[in-house]
Length: 354
Image 1 (cartoon, helix red, strand yellow):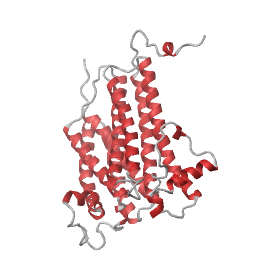
Image 2 (cartoon, rainbow, N blue to C red; image 1 turned 135 degrees about the vertical axis):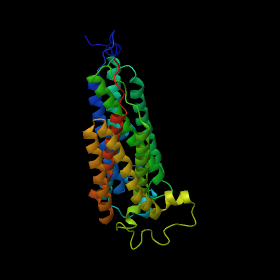
Image 3 (tube, helix red, strand yellow; image 1 turned 180 degrees about the horizontal axis):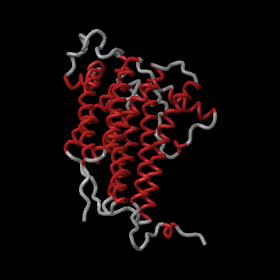
Image 4 (tube, helix red, strand yellow; image 1 turned 90 degrees about the vertical axis):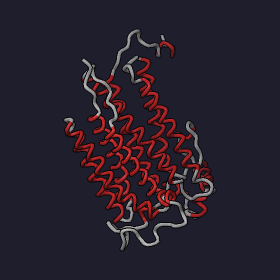
């Protein structure tokens, strides 16, 4: 006899917490978010983000399937400022190439939401969510929904009066993605520890870790500004910008200080170059603290990631923003964020309850 949906979702009489299984699922979702950030970087660097001009959460899951469907999607794109001012004359085959990356990016977002939603629903039905973690699961889902809204808000900025998306909205989109990534990793680490020791308590965010994460978040924001403004193309030399540490005339006196730091490509590239060293010092402090707490692997991961990230940043400039190097730079920034969250969790672990 077939079971009704209400019977299938009927909760067991007693809770059956499954922290180890939930931890593994959250690590899987975090890996999916990492993949989405990488694809998002490719989407931005290939100027593919405006190729889909509509937001259809359900029907948009399928790509165009017939020549007529492709032509309709292409015709919609040809009405955008990006096509009219930058890509006029693009063929349908060229359009299909940029459509691919934006489609994969959106599809990954839908897949992440589906997997996370299924995990929460099944865990709730089985009463497998440990006490105190239900609100975190709901918060992660809410952040995912917010990310979809931010993504469309970002795309809309490039469909009317601009030939690209707003670099500020791009930064908000990236930082929120990494917030989701960090919350997933932190919660998965808490659950993994709970599975090993039922008396353990969730880790707390220490002041040192909070400062380091804020410094890193600002550097990632500067990286998004650099990508969105194409500031990486302004100077392809290092450590100087051309012949000077800061080029003459690079500071726009017609703008406020804040506007220069947000909208001036030369100023943004300059700050991004040198804030990297502040970021390195901050995250290595977390690595040292984690090592003292016995979290050697986390400390090594932070040190390796920040070293690779600085080298990739320099290589991105010297290569003239070569696509593979620039994508690796963004991917490593995401890995660095995950490593710092790992280290921050290690130094914030509370002693287990008796």
